[in-house]
Length: 84
Image 1: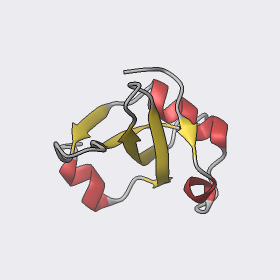
Image 2 (image 1 turned 180 degrees about the vertical axis):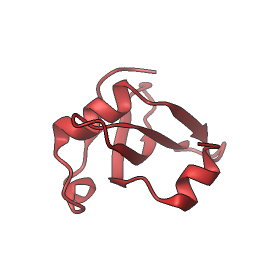
Image 3 (image 1 turned 90 degrees about the vertical axis):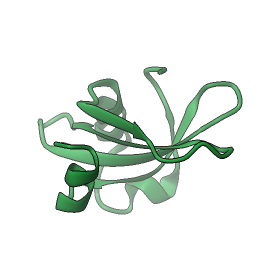
Image 4 (image 1 turned 30 degrees about the vertical axis):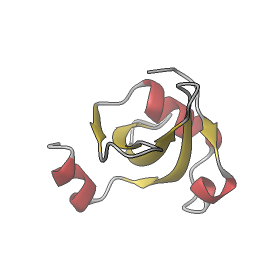
């Protein structure tokens, strides 16, 4: 999976920066494919620049790139989904 992703403005609404989101994706501790439809949706969790775990929801693009449309502090629900 590619290192950099496109971060939609709505992914920033919970106070994370684009750098935090990029860092969490590059250093993801867990990634799970949620569906097999197009676009494929992935759930992921990784540390932001301060080391806090962040959850991400991403859509895979036809060219293999990803778009992050949700990012926030890791919730218990997402941690359970990702077996963290």
